[in-house]
Image (cartoon, rainbow, N blue to C red; front, side):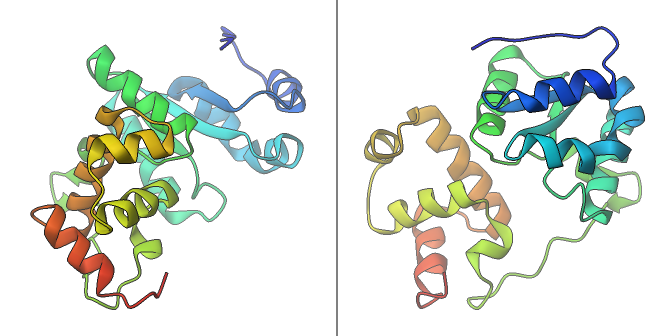
Length: 193
């Protein structure tokens, strides 16, 4: 993996990066992202499948980007990476972002007034695709057929730790207390996926 860092990224730098088809992830520091984020559509036109993320240090800055992400169709696939976490956690978050998964740290969802957005009520008819990432649906489908974390990790080419992290996120998103409850919820959808 090659990593390039620009002290003062510009639109021209980003377009040059986006033109390089081997670039998979572009991470903007929050101090620069505010200036460049409004141009993201033009960058995407050039970059295609490149994943975009904002790395934030200040939680209020992260919340602002998260709120913009919720309110904007253009930013709906923007990833957020906290720079205030231990390196092993950050590495896992970075790896998930490279795979195209979304990581929304809890610190961004909770304000003094409560949650920024209320989680949708889950029912048996709520589709997994409405609330889970593509990778989480993959993991949950393998869990539902009875596979253990080690087998799932091998099948998907991921580490066991990554599978555990996916399961943690799945359980939180659907409000299940364990794998069995998550599997039951997934199977109750009667193939609506």
